[in-house]
Image 1: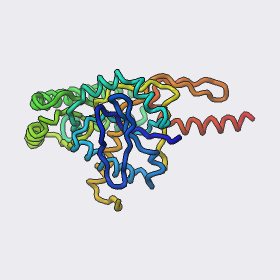
Image 2: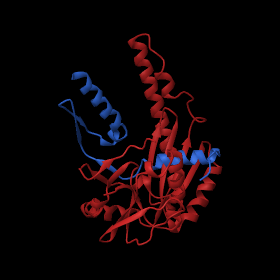
Image 3: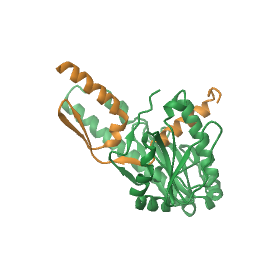
Image 4: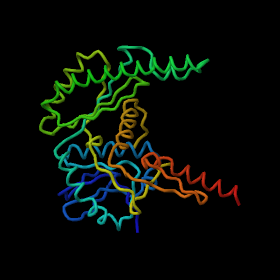
Length: 240
Length: 66
């Protein structure tokens, strides 16, 4: 019995993309399928090589326009129980695959270090306070700076989403006040891809903060369903 | 595959690694038993990355008590 390292779920899919040296397999049950590979620890010499292959393969998945619900790195199951897992999560899979059908994800990294306040919370907390009053004052200052940063991010995100609204289906935001960075993920239907990229390029040219973007990707930030912890799933730590 | 030295490629691999951490996750409670004491972790996602070190710690603890 072999161990399957899960990559993603698909629906009504017969052929999955492959690249030389990376040939994922498909196990199906009813209309649904799970894409998997044997443990990467046995296939690749290191994490860098594994990620390079994954990067190429994800690119192929996107351009084949297959809707794939990606699975977080490090979840395995015995090959024999894969149909059972698909059957158990059929309702959740249906719902999630319906939400992301026909969409790609684009990710923006917004860097606010050159805008607003120059001191991040991290530098303040790293200094040892001499007394309680000083400690509380620093905490207040840190809290104010965090709130200012969050306001700044929300304003910028509202501006970006407002201008990109016709072309996006959803977005997800993560903020890091200590580094004054925010990650913004957009769920973009294939049919609007050209319009989205054109308008994003235009917005980047007129932006005061640094924006880096990558994509298209399978919709990693919009895979909202979660496996329930049970004996069929195994966590696999990738340590070469 | 050749050696990856281009900085853009390295950056891309970092993005891919971060993305791969965002997919469908396991949720729910996990109970690990360590030296007959149940340790309950509410956030299994956190445990996934450190489960090996916890198990190593359990082995060390058992070694000390024998």
